Length: 134
Image 1 (cartoon, rainbow, N blue to C red):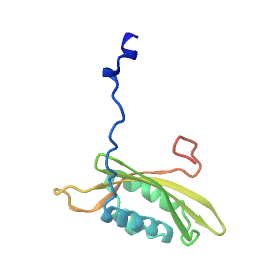
Image 2 (image 1 turned 120 degrees about the vertical axis):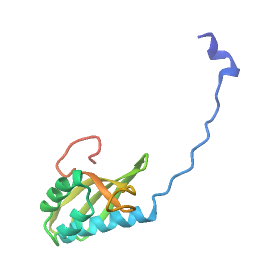
Image 3 (image 1 turned 90 degrees about the horizontal axis):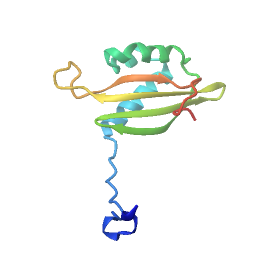
Image 4 (image 1 turned 90 degrees about the vertical axis):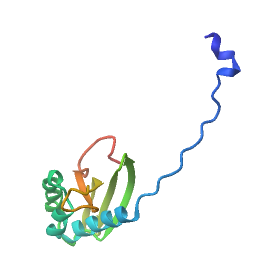
């Protein structure tokens, strides 16, 4: 308690880290994935997904009726290490809003899809109640 009054122990304002902008190719990959989901192009969705996320993405694709949604809104993006999370909401005139989240990662040089952004995990947040739901 005696240190509270000693001004030498005060840190002062901390510098704000620079904002890391999402890579343009990652944004393009996210847009292409969302467009494929809205249009119901399963082959593109499967090609843009890693092995561990393929099943989850196809399950999400199956729950979206092709042509039902005409607007895609990215609600949020976050970066953890070298992976980017994208949370999006699909809306349509006669369809209930559909919310999903997916994580994109850059494929390594050893991979057959080297240099491409692929989905590593995906979650349907439409009916979910969590800290991520809004």
